[in-house]
Amino acid sequence: MVKAVVGANWGDEGKGKITDMMAEKADIIVRFQGGANAGHTIVNNYGKFALHTLPSGVFYSHTTSIIGNGVALNIPILINEIKSITDRGVPMPKILVSDRAQIVMPYHILLDQYEEERLGKNSFGSTKSGIAPFYSDKFAKIGFQVSELFDEEILKDKVYRVLETKNILFTHLYHKEEMQPEALLETLHEYRDMIAPYVCDVSAFLDKALKEGKTVLLEGQLGTLKDPDHGIYPMVTSSSTLAAYGAIGAGVPPYEIKEIVTVCKAYSSAVGAGAFVSEIFGEEADELRRRGGDGGEYGATTGRPRRMGWFDCVASKYGCRLQGTTDVAFTVLDVLGYLDEIPVCTGYEIDGVVTTEFPVTAKLEKAKPVLTVLKGWKSDIRGIREYDALPENCRKYIEFIEEQIGYPITMVSNGPGRDDIIYRKGK
Ligand code: GDP
Image 1 (cartoon, rainbow, N blue to C red):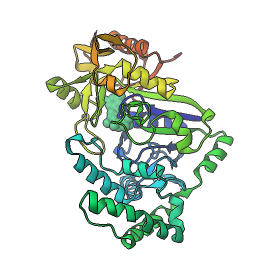
Image 2 (image 1 turned 90 degrees about the vertical axis):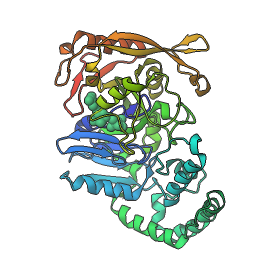
Image 3 (image 1 turned 120 degrees about the horizontal axis):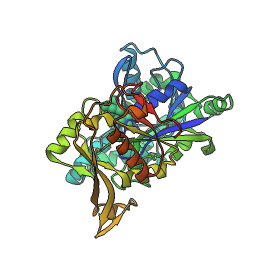
Image 4 (image 1 turned 90 degrees about the horizontal axis):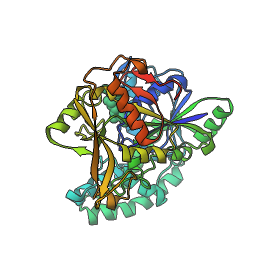
C-alpha cells in the first residue's frame, strides 16, 4: 500500500521528521516532485541533517530511497548529499533514480539567477536552484531525461539544439556570456557517470513491490499553498505539491494511495513572497522565530529567516482538503509553551465580509485575519507520550484547531526526535 506525507501550508511543516518516523515501518520512500530548492531537517541517532534531494528514509538500512520521475534532479547535489551522510556514519543507503526523471541543467541555475536579478524587487523570491526554468523546459519538451544521458547521439544533438535558444537569452536578454556546447556535453558525461549506479525503471520496480505487499511512502516537498494550481499563484513552486501528484511523480496507480498524512505546524511560517494573512511582525515574530522548529525558523537551504504567523485555520482547512487528508500530524507544538495566550486565525475578512473559505490570490491579498485568542499552557510538553498527560489548555488548543479544520489530528509531535510523538488512539 502507498501512504503520502505532505504539507498543508507553505512548507517547513515538519514533513521530514514525520517521514523519517513513518519510514521505520515502510519499505520504500519516494520523492515525487520538487528539487533541491527546499529542505527537510531531520534529527536522529546519527545527528542532525538537512536533506534537499534524498528522501527522509535514507537513515534506515531496511528502506529503499527513490528519486521519482517528477523530481527536478540535480545530479551533483544528489551525489554530494549521499557523500555527506555516509561521511557522518550513516550506512550507504539503497538509492534508485528514475530513468524518466529529468535533469537540472547548469543553464537552468544560471537562468534562474539572471531572471531574479532582472526582476529586482518584483522577483519571486526563488532559491535560484533552477527549478522554475527546469519545469518550464520539461513542459516545453526540451528537458533532458536521465535515460538520454546514455545515448550519445541524442544527447549531443539535443545539447546543440537547446543551447541555441538558451544562448540567445544569455547574450540578448541578460547580457551574459554564451554557454559552450562541448563544455556542457563534458559536464553531462560526468553526470552520466555519477548517476549510472542508481538508474532504474522506477514505476516497474514499484509495481512489483506493491504486488509483493510492500509499503511505499511518498514524501512531498513544500505544501498545498505552494501548489501551482491550488496555491497562492504566482508565488508558488513549479511542480504540484499535492498527494494526488504522487501517483504521477512516482508512477503508481492513484487508487493505491490509501493514507494521506497531512502535516500542519502548530503555528505558521513561510518563505518567499506572497500573501500571508496571519503573519506577525517585530519582537513577537522574532521571539517565535528564535524558538521555532529545532534551533529557529531559518531556511534549510538558504538559511534565510522565515516569515512567522499564528496558526491559520482557513489556510489549513483548505490545505488539508486539497491533499485529501486521512490523518493530520500536528507538529512543533512544544514551541508554543512560552506563550500566555495564543491567537489563532479562524477567518478572513475580505471587503468587510468574514469567510472561512480560502480565496483566490487577488482576494487573498485583501484578507485581514480574524483572530480567536486561546489560553497558553505555559509549560514544557516535550517528553510527554500520552495524549491525556498533556496540559488541559494544550489539549484544548489541539481540539479547537481540529474542529476548525475538520480533519482528525491523529499524531501530535512535541519535539524534533523520532520518538517525540503522541498518537491519539481511536482517532
Ligand atoms: P519540512 O520541510 O516540512 O520537513 O520541515 P523543516 O525540516 O524545514 O522544518 C521542521 C523543523 O522543525 C526541523 O528543524 C525539525 O527538526 C523541527 N521539528 C519537527 N517536528 C518538531 C517538533 O514537534 N518540535 C520541535 N521543536 N521541532 C520539530
